[in-house]
Length: 528
Image (tube, rainbow, N blue to C red; front, side, top):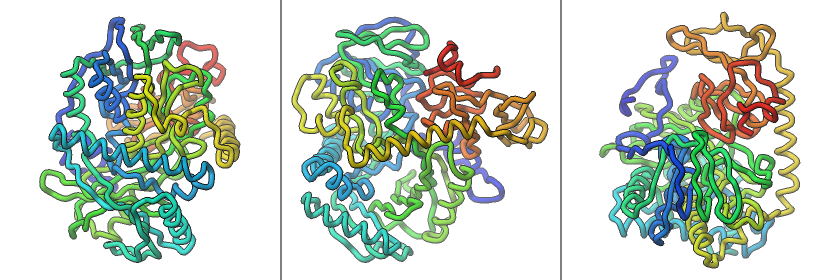
């Protein structure tokens, strides 16, 4: 697709097809599919910022490293980020002080600040042209309720010694109550940065394989990662950097994470962006930063969070961001639109460390809560020390074996009640649409021969039908008209309109035959 091609949707400014700005105007390296057995020191599953940074660090230590990805490198969450590098992760420090104590809240800030400094140092050391620029980061409140929360967060900054202050204005046509600034944060172009790291990994002898889907792990002193093509990668350590873990062991991650989507527009505005990176304390979220696109400034407008597979029509989220942009900036053009998905843990802190307690050979990083540039880098730095057997001050903080009682008990009940509710809701749904009622370009859940199915009629009038039972644990997927995909409301699996897996935890495509929940336990087509 031509990155500069603007197509209209319903006579509006929104591009017809989703395309991330971070995937345009850059040449991505290509790698083969793994079709043989190999032995390495470390196998890394997932080629986003956590996996690539981990491979770079470990290759620099002289270890034999292999990275595999089920898709292309840098085509997942990392390529659909806002690309802010900051330790200001919404209103989080007052919450962490309350739920985990001052020391652990301070460690979280320290880990993310060190991640920012590592990225800056790496950019400088290798002269990486990735538009890295220091920025002050702001979180602003437009209501009195959120203003009080911002004031409480400012108190947490003082307790933790964070360089920040309350201010009364921000340089936009947004009427605010107050804002909290965190000084000396940054932004960059994530794929330009990581493509350079990939070249450095190759120079150190690292191996990278695309279109290679991991489906299982044989644990032990020398664990093996097994792929859909029956290839085997045996290593001393396995690092799971796949967003949702493709292998859970006995970690029960499906009960401890939920998937959340958000939306982004890259727009041309009539007035210049004043600098800085911004996010609203109020909901729905509004996040802002600028990018330099071929010497032309664009503004990223991001927000509209919701649980995957739940809520309003997805195109309405894009339209809401467009309306916000018109109100604040007066838009000339919407160049790109895309969406992103990330995972949230029970206590809002990422899970980084041993997949299950006492299994030091298999490590996991997940639950970055949409702050993956700093959290993903912090995870890679922790992984390096754990693989090398070095002490790290953040290992206990991030350990997946933790259970922070205050938030975790409540959220465990709420999130799993939501999963059960979505499961039952989908099974009881009796859609009225049939294939004959669909227009070109329309997708919907339909009834076909008395069974619940998913159907999409393409622009040529061809109808693509899939069974709507997710191949992860059997929930019923819903239609996402913004990305033309089938999304699972339980754990965030996403499928193309033909049923192919776009995003896990599901490993197998949606089926064409009448697939039932019990098949997830008995069928080879199950990905559970």
